[in-house]
Length: 130
Image 1: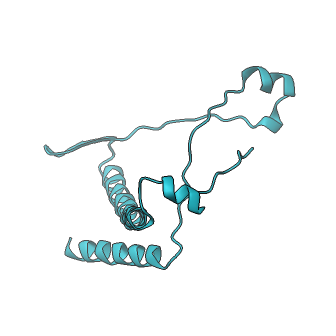
Image 2: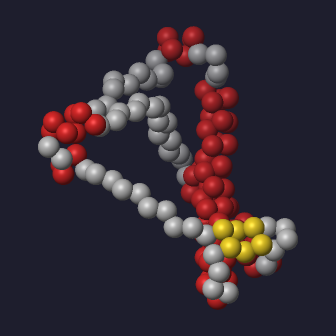
């Protein structure tokens, strides 16, 4: 269920807006750049995790301590239930609802593509140095 949205692009809203469109555009540009950096870092993190898990498997251990770093591997289990799998009375009695703010963000220009390409190139350069 989506709530109604309130757009901030009318002339009246702009008069009352404390931040100019140019200033907001700079913040959004920084956000786009950060999303690109985050994507590159997530890839690097996954690559490192894979290498550490491989080393732990080779050593037949679930804990590694190098003196500088410690890694412990454990298994976690989550259980889920779908609304369609339960009688309505059970669902309505035990279902938990939370409400939170979600910001949907996308670049209208090619800035996002450029930021991701730059982050990818930077990550590639780092991996070549290692």
